[in-house]
Image (cartoon, rainbow, N blue to C red; front, side, top):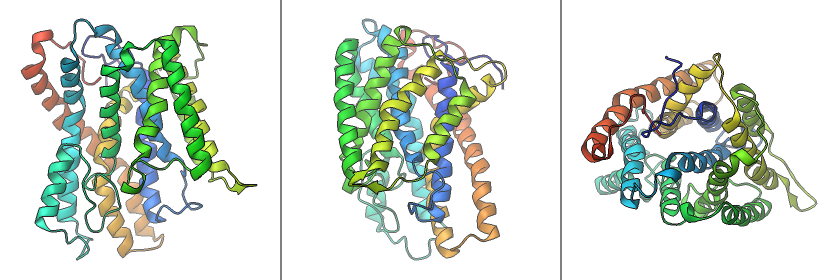
Amino acid sequence: MSSQLDVTSTGKQHFEVLDGLRGSAALLVVLFHIQGITVDFTQGKLLLPHAYLAVDFFFALSGFVIGYAYDDRWGRMSVIEFFKVRLIRLHPLVVLGAVLGFLSYLLDPFAGSRQHATLFALAQALVLGLLLLPARPLPNRWEDTHTLNGPSWTLLQEYLGNIVYALVLRRLSARALILLAALGAIALLLTGATLGALDGGWGWSNFWMGPLRLWFPFVIGLWIYRVRDRLPAVRLGFLPLTLLLTIAFLVPTLPTVWGMKWNGIYEALCVVLLFPFIVLCGAHSDAGRGTVSVCKFSGRISYPIYITHFPFMYVWMNYVALNPGSSTSTVVIALALVPATIALAWGAFRLWDVPIREALRNRFLRANGRVPAGAVYE
C-alpha cells in the first residue's frame, strides 16, 4: 500500500496515528468478541475484559475528527448538506452489516432449530436494521437493540452525536464545551461507581447508557481538536499508543472493596482521563515511514471490520455451543477468524463501501466541487 496519506473530501490530510489507533481498537473489539464467546463473556475468564470501552474511544476520535473535518466548512455548507455527507460516509456499511446479519440468521449451519423467527419478525428486523433503528430481539440472539448486527447500536449513537454537533455543538465555545464535558465526566464516574462497569447501551435493558457513553467522549474529542495547539504536544507514536490502549483493556476485572466498585471507577477513569490523553498524543504524533502504511491500512478497515464482523460472531456462537470446551479445532478456528474478518473488512471497503460512496457523491455532492483523489474516507 502506498505511504501517501489519505485526505478528506476537502483535501485535508488525515491524522495518520489516529487512523491507526481506530483500527487497533476495532481489532481489539474483534478479539474480545471471539474469545468472549468461548467463555460466555464471563468476568474473570475474559482476556480483554475492558475491550468494550473501545466504543467510548471511537466516540472520542469521532468528536475530534468531526471538528477537524467540518468546523471550518459552516457558512458554505448547510445542515442538510452536512447530513448528506455523513449519511454517505456511514450508511453504506450500515446496510451491509444488516444484510450480513440477515444472511447469517438464515444460513447459519450450526443454529439447528434455535433460530425459528417468523417471516414477519425477520423482515421487520431487516427493515429496521437497514434504517439503523432498534428491533425486537430475534430467537437465539442476545438482547441487542440491533438484533441482526449488534454493533450497529454505536452507529445510532454516532448519528445522534452528528445531529447534536450540527445543531448545537458547532456553535459552542471551547469553554462551553469543556463545561459540558465535565458534566458528562461526572455522570460517567457516578454510573461506573454505581454499576461497577460501563458495559451498556447495546441492549434493551441498558439502552439509556448509549447517550451517556456518547456524551463525554464525543464532546471532549471536539474540545481537544479546538484547543489542541494550546495543550502539551506529547508525541508517543502509533505503536506505544496501541500498546497503552491494549494494556488498559487487559487489566483484570477489579473487585468491589469496602463498598467501592473499583472496576466501574477504573473504566470511567479510562474514558475520562486515558482516552483523551491518547487522542491528544495521537493528534500530535507522526506515524513515520515505518508505520505510516500500517496506519493507513488500519484506518481504512477500522469501520468495515467493526460493522461487518458481528454477523459471523453469531455463527461462531452457535458453533461453540455445539462444541463446548477449548479443543484444538476450536482454538484453530478462533485464530483463523482474525485474518478472515480482516480480509472481509478489506473486501467490504474496496468492493462495497468505496464504489457506493463514490456513486452517491457523484449523484448528490459533486455540485459542491470534485472530491480530490485519495479522499477514500473521512
